[in-house]
Image 1 (cartoon, rainbow over the protein chains, first blue to last red):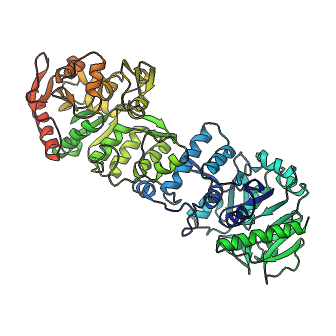
Image 2 (image 1 turned 135 degrees about the vertical axis):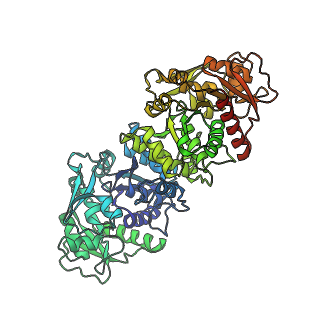
Image 3 (image 1 turned 180 degrees about the vertical axis):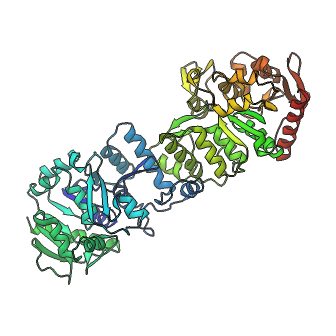
Length: 306
Length: 306
C-alpha cells in the first residue's frame, strides 16, 4: 500500500500517475481538509474534490479546478440576486456540495460521503480526508487573521502572509483508516508535490498523524513542488518569501525535517543541505505520461530506500 | 390597494394581469406557503417562486413552472451521484433556493428575503408569504399521511386524497404587513383562481387571516379555477371528486362560504346555488391580454360591490 498525502492540483496530478501504475487496493490518498470551508450554507472541500475529479477523469484542464463540461447558470443567477460570487461554483460541481452538505447534516462522516462519491464515479483507489473533524486553515496578514479561502480566492492570495494557523487541528482525530494503513506497514508514504504550508502541514498537524507516519517503518518520500525556485502553480514560493525563506526545493525539504527519508526533485536544482536521500526526476507534470513517469520514479526511489 | 391571495400558476397569471393594470403600490400578493418544503437541505417555496418568476417575466411557459432559459447540469449530476431527483431543480432556480436558505438560516424572515428578491428582479407589486412561520400541507391517502410535494410531485398526485392538514398553521402568525393592509381598508380582496384545498385554504387557516379578510370592509371576490367542471391545470377537480363533491365553479364558491361577496366565473357555467353575487368573464388565461382582461373584469366586479 502506498499512502499518499495530497493537497489540490499538484498533488492530484501525482495521485493520478500513481493510480495508473498501482492496483486500486495499492493506493490510499489522504486529502488535506484545511482548505475546506462553509459558503452559501454548503460544506466545500476543494482538495478532496480536485482529487476526486482528477482521478475520475472529470477535472477541468482549462480552469485547473472544478469539473469538465461545466455550466455556470447558478453562479450567474446568484450574482444577479445579490449573492456572493467570489468563489465560483459550477452547476455540476454544486451537485457534489449540496449532496455532501445534506449527508453531513444527516450525521454521515466526511470519509463515508467522500468514499461513496468515489465509488459512484468509478475511482479505484480510496480517497480519505485527513480527519472527519473540521480543520480550517487561517492566514495572518497585516490586517489580522482571515479564513483561507477569503485570502486565497477572494483576495487572490495578495495579502502578505505573516503566520498560519490550523483552527481545530488540536482537537481533530486522524482518520481511522489512514491510521490503520500506516500501522499495517505500507510500502511507502508519498508526500505529493503540494504546498507544504497549506496542503501538507495541515495533515501533519492532526494529532498522531506525523507520529504515525514517522513510526510506520516505511520510506517517506516527498516530491518537491518547487522547480528552479518557482512553484509550478499557486502561492508556495510567495509564502516562503513572505515568511523569510528563499523558495527552493531544499527549503521544502527543510520544512518536512526528519520526517523524510527520500526526496524527489528536479534535475539541476540545488540539492545542497538536503538531509534525506535525493532522487532526481522530471517533476513538471504536463501530460499523463509525465504523471506516470514521475509516479514510477517515486516508487523506484521509495523501494530503493527499503 | 388590492390584496390578492394566490397559489402557483393560475393565481400567478391573474396576479400578472393585476400588476399590468394597477400601480405597483396598488397590489399586494399574498402567497401560499403550505407547498413549501425542505429538500436537499434547501427551503423551497414553489408558490412564492412561481409568483416571483411570473411577475418578473422570468417564468418558463413551456414547463409551466421554474425559470425561462434554464439549464439542468446540477440535476443531471446530482442524479449521477445518487441524489434524489424526483423534484427537478434547474440551475438558475437553484440560486434562489440556496440564497434564501442561507439567509433564513442567518435569521432573516421569509418576508424579508422574498421582498429583497422581488426588488432585485424589478417587480413592482409586493409579494409576501401568508406567514413567516412554517406551514406544511399534508395529504392523507389510503397509505396514511404524506408530505404535500411527495404526493404532488413524487407520486404525481396519484394517491386518492382522503383529508388535508396544514401542519403548523395553528401556531403560525399572519404576515404583519398583510394584516396591516387588510386593516387599512383595501379596495378589494381578490382570491385568485387557485386550488382552494391546497393554495387558498392554507392561507385562510393562518389564525386571524380569515377574520381579517372578512372584517376588512372591502369586497371579497374569488375567481373560479374550475371551467366546465374541469381544472385548467392541476389536481383541483380530482381532489373535489375524491372528497365526495362534484367539481364545479359552484363547489369552489361553497368552499369559501360567506367569506365571498363576489364570484367571477366562466360564461355558461352553472351559477345556481352560488351565494355571492356572480360576475361573468372569460376566465381561461392563455395570453397576456387574457390575463389583463380578467384582471379588469375582477376589478370592475369588486368596484360594483362597494
